Amino acid sequence: MAKKQQGQSKKPKKEVTKQYEQYVKQFTPRPKYVTNSLKAFAVGGLICTAALYIQNLLMDRGMSEKDAGTAVTVILVCSAQLLTGLGVFDSLAKYAGAGVIVPITGFANSMVAPAIEYKKEGPVLGVGAKLFSIAGPVLVCGISAGTIIGMIYYFVK
Amino acid sequence: MDYLYAFLIGGILCVIGQILIDATKLTAPRILVIFVVAGAVLTGLGLYEPLVKLAKNGATVPLPGFGYALAKGAMDGAKEGFLQTLGGGIKNTAAGVAAAVVFGYLVSLIFSPKSKR
Amino acid sequence: MKNKLGKQTFLYPLKPRIVGAYSIVGEKEGKGPMAKWFDMILEDDTFGEKTWEKSETKMLKQAILQALQKSGRDKEAIDAVLCGDLINQLMSSSFMARDLSIPFLGLYGACSTMTEAMILGSLMIDGGYASNVIVGASSHYCTAERQFRMPLEHGNQRPPSAQWTATAAAAMVLSEFDKGDAVVTQGQSMPQGQYVKELYITHATVGKIIDTGMKDVNQMGAAMAPAAVDTIIRHLTDTGREPGYYDLILTGDLGLIGKEIALDLLSGAGVEIADVFKDCGAMMYVKKQDTHSGGSGCGCSASIFSGYVYREMRLGKIKNALLISTGALLSTISSQQGESVPGIAHAVAVTTEGVK
Image (cartoon, rainbow over all chains, first blue to last red; front, side, top):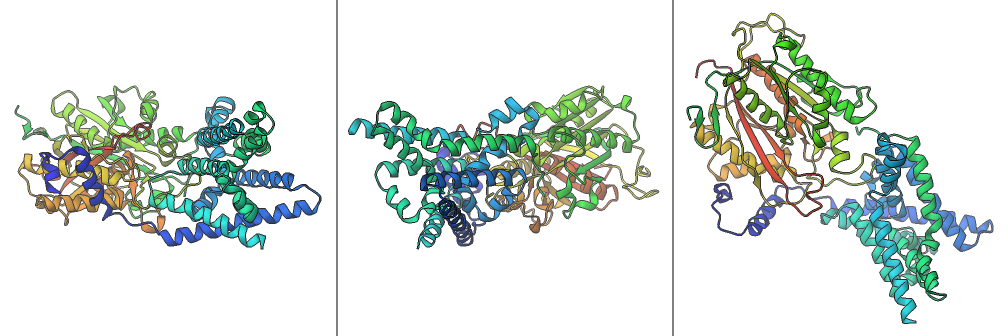
């Protein structure tokens, strides 16, 4: 490693970087893979189960399955956004990680978080634009992927 | 039991996300994009629909489920016509997206970010 | 060149003095182990302002004006203000300085700004271009996160190697003259009537940018460690000093991981500094504050230099210190473009021993 300091190394830069990255790994604490996965599993599973419960409840009151499903999505989205506004969602995410990020709640949070931050830059150009600064890619890529697949189906059939 | 499958499949999809967070340098937005596209592609291949039938919200609530909804909407539209294909994805997810935009906008106007402790 | 030693080190024969210093930190920093050495701890990181940027500006202004007061000098006596921060276009510094009516030089060195400012301020005094100069730097968790990383309320998990941008601002007044060793300090932060030492800046080593090729923005400490190591070795070589000459070799924000890497790299080069080596990023917080690999930001090193180091040296508890602020010179778009994180480190040697 000392030779790195002399800057005389004849190795190509990429190799030096790879070596250094390997070297750095030994100083970097590992994330707690198992604990994190268990927390994500439990919380994520719970959110999905709760969603199913609410959906069944709505269907019992006469909603069609499709409408109930949509309603549940709306409920999850709005709840996540409210929790973001209240400043609670980030603490949940710190604990549960993918358990709240992977469900639609993560997407909802990623819309409100930047928007709320840029309020000082104005309600139209600040908040309005920032609603999509992190969520934009998800919508763009999701809509593109979905529509292209639909197109493929259309032309193949 | 429906609830069991919802819990298991939902949990597993989240674990996959968690492993990506912990083991790779991928940030949350990148992971969400991967998931939504994966959901759409798997739907196109006919692989996601059975998962949805089995796990219901365990498959629709996680972000691949959003991709599923987008792809399915487009595929359903494909049965009717070109324009219906084009609009199908957004049509299927319209209420969710509208809610996210409107409610999100309101929340952002009302609340302020808090300094971290 | 009569005042240049070796390849990168300046000698200051006139020995600019540090005659006043002030540090102000946020809530979290005020709950950390260094709290008792800071001059002011905010109850609320907004400091009563409507935006985070205004709050950082206010902190920096307070640091500068209070350091001025503690130095016993008037604003009219100050020849220049040199300061910087992390915000785009140096927003905090420029907007802070607009009311000051003092010639202003804004600096960007990322987290290495404090020693960069000290080096240049000392040059102005030693070169006869200024009698009194104020140097300062600031950072704020909320302004940095919003600019470089994710919005505050965004749900994400930081990896164990991530560092926490400190909410801190600090300033020092550098001067041609102090009143001599028997100076009685003003201000409630130093014991009244105490016999205190003069602080002299004797040498400075300007760092080169060292880019390891690492792209992970959550591994700042590791990205900057080689730059710190390079500057330390260069300084010792240029001055002919041994690590043991110093009571304290203090880097800015390598953090827990970067600090270990630097120690290891230095050992590998035959330079043992473990006995005197500390890092501001590693000192700023305790484990239970959950900052992962420690603190970072211009204010991290600035506040600890202006708080802990300044006071301990005034009281003679530290006689010779080598202060090295370290910076990561990435931009808000560089990592999206696939660029790596270049590092830099500038060193300043401060002593209480008047004649070498």
